[in-house]
Each structure stands twice: as C-alpha cells, then as structure tokens.
Length: 101
Image (cartoon, rainbow, N blue to C red; front, side, top):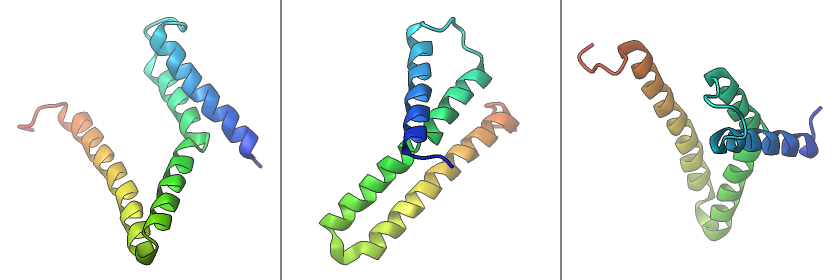
C-alpha cells in the first residue's frame, strides 16, 4: 500500500520530469506518451487531492453555516471541469478542429 512518502516521490518525480523536459534537460521533442506518463505520475502523487482538500477545508472554516452547499459546489466543479476537458478532447479527436463536421 502506498503511503505519504510514495505520493511525495511520485509528485516530485512527475513535476520534475515535466520541468526537465520543458527546460531542455531531456532531449526534445519529448514523445507525447512519455509526457503523458510524467503528467500521470504528477497527478498520482496526490498533489491534486491535497489542493482540493485544502480549498474545501478553508471554505468550510470561513463559511461554516453553508458546509453542504460548499461541498456540493466543489464536487460539482471538479466533475464539471473534467467533463468539459473530455468534451473538448472528443471534439478535437472526432472533428479534427473542423466545426462543420
């Protein structure tokens, strides 16, 4: 089972490799599957969960009377943002950027 140290290592390695490919430490152009692996590593390092949790906790402390509303809005926001990204990717993949198709 993974622990906090595993997540920290994945988080650091993923973002370090993304940075290294951008500044040229890794030979360019970096293949897309390899960059996707770097992004996957960074996302699996619990980085996004940490930021989402701190956002929700901060809002619950500041607006304690509206806890259910705040959690609902944030859960909806996270789901909606993922759905929008998927729709854009599907459009780009199927229509190849041509709005007439």
